[in-house]
Length: 240
Image 1: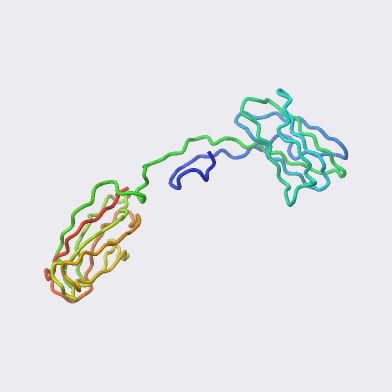
Image 2: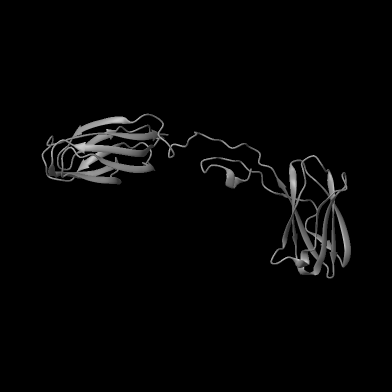
């Protein structure tokens, strides 16, 4: 599995590449062969050739199986100075790399290892992909000018609310009941006005995350007195 196949919330601990002992190595004119012992865990060799247009042959051959894991003509490659030989784990203890060159040069050999930890999936589905529970009913009266009403209480300081969807309606039409849905730090996630009564509204937040430890509130900016209208509705969300 390549890292591109993993979900974007996965965690993988990778092992750094191994610089093979003896690298870089000098190769001469004609055929030059060098033997490389494969460290435990190395399943691929990365080979960098200094002057690949002068190299007409690159052969990586197993000393245990006699299999040619790479056999190419680097001089025919376009803009490629790095070559890879995939070697199944446990198949070889060492390989021989042979270059055929018209001009002497240098070659760097690096061993590539498997990851040393499995992917950690903290939650599936992820909190921004789907709610972690059923829709929650909400009901609050408009709080008055400059005041706020809590819709979802704040989670612990290390957890966040992920908003998915919300529907709501106002019981009384009053253009003075206007405000914004926001987190406890005043970051807006939406806005509304009780310009009509009994007409449902809907918002798709697509898993929007609020900052950790903050609630979802409605803060009134209009001049209507507190208790002028009641907001009824429901909200789906996750806490993680």
